[in-house]
Length: 308
Ligand SMILES: *[C@@H]1O[C@H](CO)[C@@H](O)[C@H](O)[C@H]1NC(C)=O
Ligand SMILES: *[C@@H]1O[C@H](CO)[C@@H](O)[C@H](O)[C@H]1NC(C)=O
Image: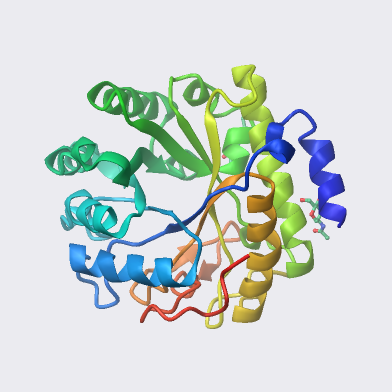
């Protein structure tokens, strides 16, 4: 397959070819289709669907509050469910718009360190550098505060692959964080499905290569793909990128199974359709639906076979 040639040139120094397969994870929202905050029992149903239908061992969340700023206390709800399901959680905090204190307080209230292995780590922020909703100095401060309070927990942040690759996040790479999550969507780069896997691998290779250059190491910071995905049927097209369940499945088989094969951990965005999710505005200024990105529908039925 062509891909192997491309990636082995791009990542010639990386230990990917000799490492074990990557770990599959899912992004999960913290609200139900009716807009209410997910409780432990809702997360339990999420995890049952994920475990019954996939090889995933980890999920990531984004925030302790819902999109309207209502407290969902997500850390306190998701961790007990994960522990009983034998799933790990990468807990996300959403510091945008002055929410840091509130997000951090909801984390502390959950006593996350008491959940042992069920807590994989904590991420502070998701694509805020890309969106310009906080700056590098603020982010470094939050990461270091989290690290100080949870010294035995992995702490990281997620952002778009191009921000990791182009030098604008170098102070964050050097801030002492443990996890770098680079998000990459060939869809948002308006790629035809035929070129999507190549684009995705290229994105990841550029981000990882720059992180390795800045740290002077191949693996000092654990590098993960924080999000990738493709909208299913009912979603919006983005240029040559066409939404549809068939393209989602084909992207999964090629891009997701391919990157896992190369030993990179990744999170699929997202597990379940979120019919209540507001639309996103693409780089072209057009509104795009974000409610059909699940590889499961909103009732937690799988859309296709997710085993690689
Ligand atoms: C890096 O990429 C981001 C996202 O495209 C952009 O906003 C930023 O201006 C770029 N920074 C540099 C230094 O090129
Ligand atoms: C396909 O993806 C590669 C890698 O990102 C890119 O260089 C190339 O321009 C893409 N081709 C098209 C037709 O967009």
